[in-house]
Amino acid sequence: MLLFAVAKPSVWEKLQAVPTSIWVNLLIGVVILFLLVRIWKSLGEINEFAPWIVLLLVGGSVVLYWTYERTEPKVLSPVFDFLADYLPSRPSRPPTPDASDGR
Image (cartoon, rainbow, N blue to C red; front, side, top):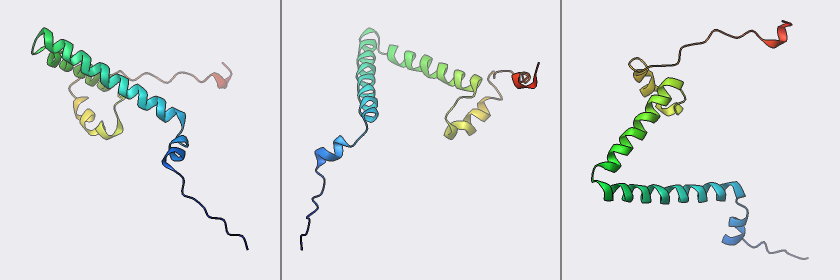
């Protein structure tokens, strides 16, 4: 009787099984993190408050966009439901006629 010994896959074999899209996303994330640190340091050389001002402007823009378009992450919906009472939101549009009704 022949018994086959099944070897555990090595770390290299496990890494090869990871889809390429995961590696591309990881690389993009590392590059973005590197660029953000460089921009933060460059702004810090200009003025001590410059990076914080830019962060406030970008963060505020994202909050306003998410509130207007209601494209926030679902976990933040309760916060944006509260903010939507005070910040502008996109007006609701009347439904457009469906092209399949023969008009």
